[in-house]
Length: 398
Image (cartoon, rainbow, N blue to C red; front, side, top):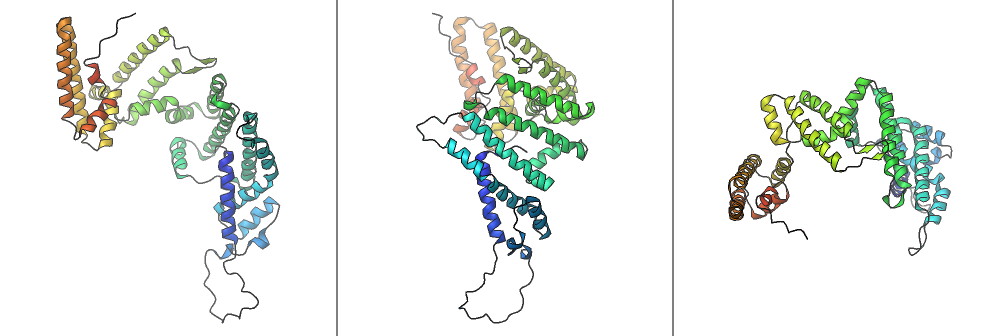
């Protein structure tokens, strides 16, 4: 679990304290002495809130372990116990928090001083509070987040429950260190070398925790190569077997041309860029070779960047799914005709021929959309080829 930011923690503590007051306040206050006694009536039926009403007087204690035991004995649910503990722990940090706020609350026209040190102290206090909460409540200290739980269940489903707990703890520790690195770098000028070294250390720690088979399954689901591959295959919908085969090829490519190395960012000079471009073409051919022939043809089309952007636009506009295929076929037809013009026409003929070709293409594409605004949206999302049919002439060099 990532550490709470100071603002979020402060708001959470106030909200939780209010929740605790509402839950613990007696629901039936005693009438004033001058009031006449109410007529006798049948006892009220028991309700689920009965253990909560008026219980704080016999529960309150400054000893946190005793407080947890008493709250559980009274039947408080884990979410309420967690809220009460957060409020009480926050009060115990009040003096330190006020001292920090006094140092940071300088007039707006004055420099706030060492912001990195202030941020780190906020983090330190937040971590101490969360560490104390985990020590007191164990697994109940973690908030329930359905989306996070769904993601982690998908990401760690191949692991035994005990090892999944260890992996979550490891990732949380590195998230805290990563947050600390950002907090200590005012102005977002984070040291890339330190960030790359931390990422490398995390990957080594994961590899040491998991077996080789488990580590591969983890990378298959959670690595940067997996994220890049899944995004590129969003329209292709691969089978699991196809995805696994493509992942091995993609991971090998990324290991060679990773963005960060142990010594820092790789210098993407012209030679490296040419090598990467050639290797990327080779990767694409290797992936197609690993697929069945009919799937390879589909892959070539559905993984094209322009096709994917067009497909996303068509879905967003609510147009028939066949619109994407028709736009793709139209694009390939006009690009082939443009190439034919460059191959057969003289320079004097090209200008008028390309201009006519572009006008025809715009008319054909516009007919596939229901509204004029859709055509303009397409030009920005996959339809840049319309402009490349007849690019403006280059200015002569000075």
